[in-house]
Image (cartoon, rainbow, N blue to C red; front, top):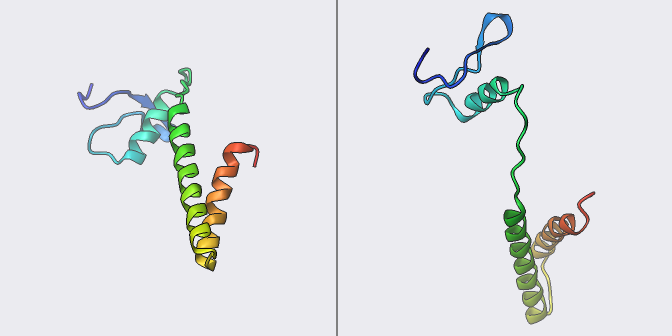
Length: 98
């Protein structure tokens, strides 16, 4: 067995799917790993901390935008567009079905 190979599974049309090595791109390794591990249970990773970090960052951005708007007592079209995008991202945390 090739020392670089982690899995060896015969793929479609006699091609070797599931054999991967360090020279492959991430996309190629991802395909081969996914193919080779298709009979294994899927393990879910918790991203709660990352979600919270992102949420707090969005809140800070919105607070900064609000402060700038109140300080200047105006909002440019460019800043209004940025505000809409940020509010849309923030709203998805509050109502994830959107």
